Length: 317
Image 1: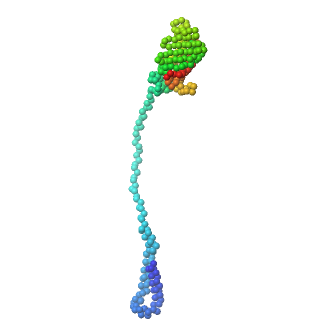
Image 2: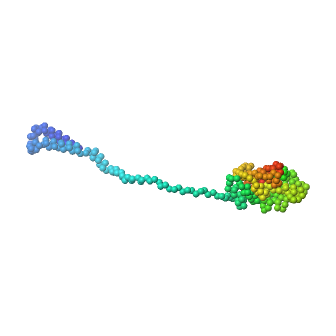
Image 3: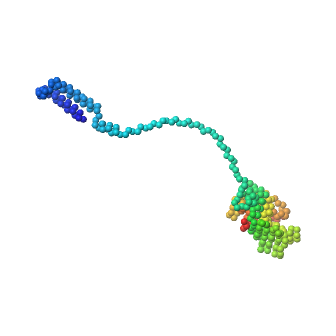
């Protein structure tokens, strides 16, 4: 800036000197300035003015200089690093591999139930597997017979309209192991029937009569009553009854008195004139141990319609 001021001042002085150089020539002469120098003074002034203008137009101002110092002192902006471009890997089609064939599901062919005696499990595999097919009659007889034997005994309420046992409701106390025995009683009729390994007897209030199919008419009649009383409590007789039954169907989720039971039902081809006293229609409900809890038997014996409903309770084991 001082250069500019000097340049302006010098040009003004040059103009003044140019206008009055004649007036002060004497004064300059007196100061001892040579004439040649005086003659070249306007040219020098012009040169200095031009140089000042050149410096002014080319050089930076004070603000520009300070701005440049600030810029130069600032940290340099980070230069972005260019990562090399990685060519994408070629996409290859997945290699087809053979899918292994799963092994067939292996289903156990035997069933079991915790706490069930082994003889019952062995005889009741059809029911333990919950087989949906029709149950073979022989397996049904073996299963229920084994379950009753393992149960060792119970109390039965027997209601009958059969001609073989007097009509009414009777109570049967029976054991199945270690040996079979029963006692049927009906206080209203004054009837008491016993049967077992030691033989049987019938008492109708007039004295006990031994059960003997080859004896007197009274003894033969007593034998028929004793045999009829065994039909739903003797494991061997129950197995025989089921063994002759056809088309046995099983319902594993039957409900009886609010409880889920296994239900077996079927029919028997019987001779109505036979003396075997076997029913034509057979239905059983079994508990969790496959012991009978209810029998429903219907049919004819010697042309006479008969029905038996037997409800078992209080199995000993």
